[in-house]
Image (cartoon, rainbow, N blue to C red; front, side, top):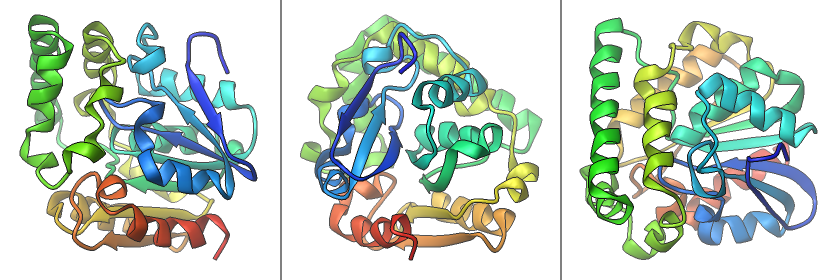
Length: 252
């Protein structure tokens, strides 16, 4: 991988790139990651500002370019939440490297400039909070948010998140938060690879975003809604999620 961008690899088979969500790291995939490694050579990245890449400073486009340059092979890509936004940028900027794309609880951005500005200010305030409170107090507060109310503590893996730094997470919010992202909705029809868009049934906002993503991508996309799961649907219901992603990665 590119120096400074941490990666962990396990398993055997066709390559599968995994990009985690905000506050997580390459270690965040839990039992699902172990299951995927039985059929794939998993390459799990630490996104800029996170985990072993805590010192890397990059926005979404630069971060996507770092990821693509480091992997240097054609592979399936799967990204969760923030990682889904990174993976979407990779697919649009480096389509020759993305054989299949899985977007989990992801968005193509905020359309309205005023709403984006509000979100940027909110992300900046969160970044300030991380730096003021420190990593562990912020993470405990973050995981107590309603977005993660259906995520069991053992699946949240707080200990693995503590491998990051407050300054790294703050930089991620300021450089790659949702408020910084130029919306990509009008570019989705450029995606020519098969795309699986996944959301948890209980996460109504992201179910709606998932439907919009599928509609924007067109005939090459399919939607999967994981029953009984919220935002972190792949961690909350790994068996159900595996039954969805497995056949897709196998080309079915």
